[in-house]
Length: 360
Image 1: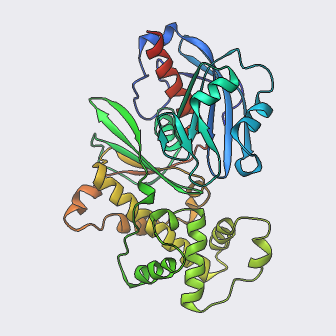
Image 2 (image 1 turned 90 degrees about the vertical axis):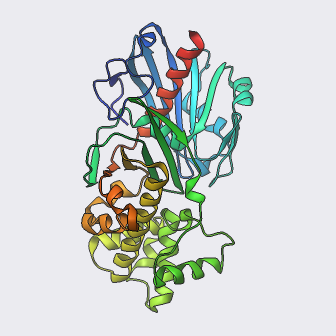
């Protein structure tokens, strides 16, 4: 997160990448209030409290919690904001799961959230629950810190975000004139599509234990470990030295990526090469489905930690490999989002935008 008391001018949009419906909206200058925002994922729940006054958004407090250490969201809320919530104008939660009529069940964690029930329990009248990837998409309006994998041709058009982490999140941004309108998807749960014989062997391996093999089974933190277990068996090789001990303290995907960065394990290097190959392929498929000429943005917690091992040429070659659509894909830029607070700011932007609508 940004330093406490850091500010962001929502009206003049002095920082940010994409223009959203809230930017340059004169109504924002008449709105003031405190907003509590959350980015709720399978691994972490990030909480933040903001104040907005005359278009200036100020961060007041923030904290990160381990999602699975708590039975429900209310437990975290009581720790983060133990006093009365009467001073909170609204709350916006970006949750990793499909949201239907203000309700959501976490895809990779056991929580269930209902905005009407939360409003009753907290006394906060206005509560918005949106998909976490929709929140990420809104957050692109303030994001400026990127790692560029592939340059584009600066052609205006729709955009998309793909985020490998505990799961695989995907969202779109529809370009309406000069304004981007984010929307959520569950594209990460679409079927994995192999390209070559090794991919087919991976699919068969995963089908032994999974009824449905989606992209999320491969392009995610757990997916990295799935690829690792497949390759270790397929190549008939042993774990790298110290692997068993290291995964006792860290998630296997983190350990595998560290071995790859260190260059000490050919197995782990190949695992990460395959992971990046599959990410490039699914990013290309997302680009074609959305005609995302405005760019592909890669979010999540994995890529920012491994950008040093991303072979841009190899990634681009995997991305531009769709026959007659290669020319179109060649124009699309690809950027890794390095800011980890994108979804939190996206949630608060969504909240402010909708509070303005309700007030006027």
